[in-house]
Every structure is written in structure tokens, then in C-alpha cells.
Length: 171
Image (cartoon, rainbow, N blue to C red; front, side, top):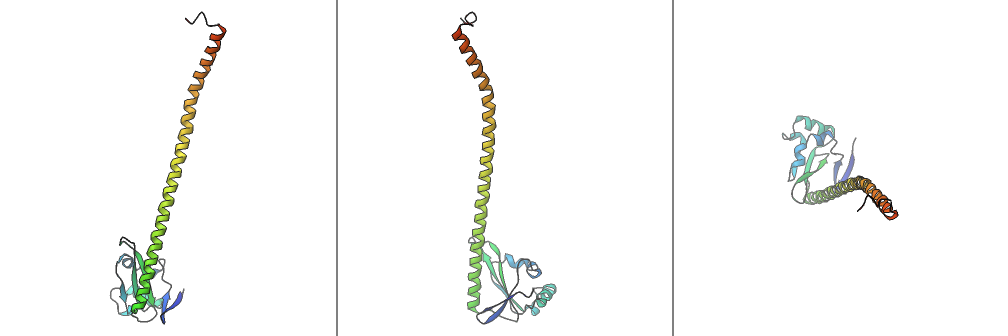
């Protein structure tokens, strides 16, 4: 796909790189960095390697900038990778905007992870409650069976004692 073209402060950005793209798959180290990085001229970069330079060139990318997405505790969660169709150095305002975007992304990721943790805890509690209910039902049944037999014998003996039919057996 050509991807979406986004204009930010008069600068056209190529906004089609996602985690499923071969380009971002080839940049795993970028997702673990805790500081911004910039490749103002992809073709002149020795860091990217020839295969990635070829992929980027085929996608029409001439410049890359990565902004780390960091959790509140500083753990790297990923990166916002911005690509330009020409050699480019983002201005201060663009970098600030990308950092804001990365902070919002980190907040959303953390929020989603907390929601998933709460859902997992709720599911575990529901499973535990179901296990408890099944145990109590089985234990209740197992306790009632012998108690019912004891109650039945007690009832029969009480009636027999009242009627006097057991008077020769009981002292």
C-alpha cells in the first residue's frame, strides 16, 4: 500500500508503517530504545543495512525518526516511527508533537494492560467462585447422605420408644 500521507507543519509524512510491515519488522532494536533517533538520509545510512535501505526506498521513505514509547516506569513499550518521502530533519515543534503522541500511546498501552489485568483477575475470581460452589455442593451432598440415615434411624427409634415396642430392649 502507499499508505496515508499526513501533513504536519507543512511537512508531508508517510504514515503507513505499522508493526506488521517488513520495514518495522526489520527494525526490532528501534522498539527497545529509550531515546529518539534520526536517520535524515536513509540511502546514506550504514546503520540500517542494505536490505532495509532497499525496503525503505521501495516504500518511498528517505528519512526516519523514532520516538520511544515509554511506560511511566521507564520501560520501553515501542516506538513511534515517522517516515518522510525526502531527506529531512524534523523541527523542534514536530519532535515535541511526536513526543506528545508517544506519551499518549504509552498511557493508552498502560491503560489497556491494566484493563487486561483486571479482566484476568475477575476471570480467576469467577473460576475460584465456581470451584467453591461445586465443592460446597459436593460436600453438602456427601454430608447430607449419612446424616439423613442417622435421622431416619433416630426417628424410627423415637417412634418405637413412644409406642413401647422396644421397651424390652431399652433399659
